[in-house]
Image: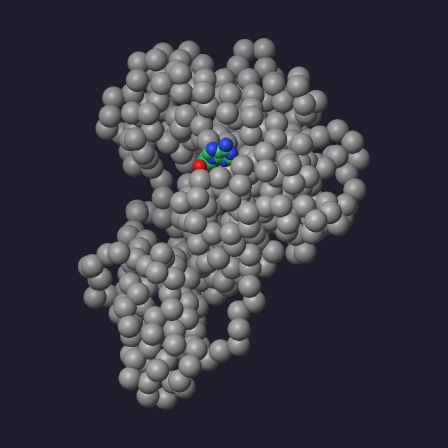
Length: 401
Ligand SMILES: C[S@@+](CC[C@H](N)C(=O)[O-])C[C@H]1O[C@@H](n2cnc3c(N)ncnc32)[C@H](O)[C@@H]1O
């Protein structure tokens, strides 16, 4: 592992305290836990035997990291591989998001883990806009959203200021802001090399810019969820203090279980409820999260009414489409992998010509045009898996209930 920067260890030891910091360092001697979240709309008959992630519905730790690329059910959107700490969002959504149709915007959404979780947790009739300003990352987000397959889930490629200019209004806003990534050090060595005190300060400034634009899109009485995957108080507590002072935000508490070992405020003199998952202390990688509310009375349905007009000014790169009626064809594991590699596949002689849906274990992978002696593969080229090796046997990650 790359050496942790001395400025980081000095600061983290000071803010976390000696005992916590030692637990955190010890975490580097073990691998990061692997966890997945099932899609309740698609994986109805599926489960897995791992230990449950206690703060999130439908979520499990796996005993080891399988090669997910070789599982067609991942590509079918039956589950998503997500770091467990990030799944704390589910507890927050259950406690604070109204059980009524709402508009939600996730301003920094790629690759999409929190957006997919949020879409699953929102009440029917809600609309979620998942935004990502970097085009290549927005395309990955759109792929994940399409595979997850919920109605009323849009992907945009804008900056938060474009939403402000479009006068978009949401009941719930999530800003999982770009950060210095201290919580990812165990999982991703590149974040260690990129870390510097200057970068922490640069991130803290950018985060305030994003938050200010996002805040202007929040309805009166609306909820604002701020999160980072870093531990330093400049990007965390100090930004929350700034939101309270400059934007008039009120911080809301979240009921948590003591067994989750969540760490609260690490800033002297700051006693608002904030929630930190520190590797070695909570079972996951790093997360900082705080829930805030805008003043004023929330009016149900108000934001949905103004949506049509404001969304015209956004760069929507994906909107959900209804699946056309078609014949579904079940394929075996080798055929499924060939299909996902964008190769032509041959279907049975009894399969009718024309557009067919290719399914693995009953789950749709995508479309093909059957022309008789072969089927033209219509799986999106950008999604194709690039592995040349395919295991002979299907190693299942999920099992039927
Ligand atoms: C921590 S990641 C988000 C992870 C995501 N929420 C998830 O759960 O998969 C932060 C994202 O913010 C994006 N970003 C960078 N600059 C931004 C800006 N000015 N406004 C909004 N998002 C930005 C990054 O490209 C990155 O995809």
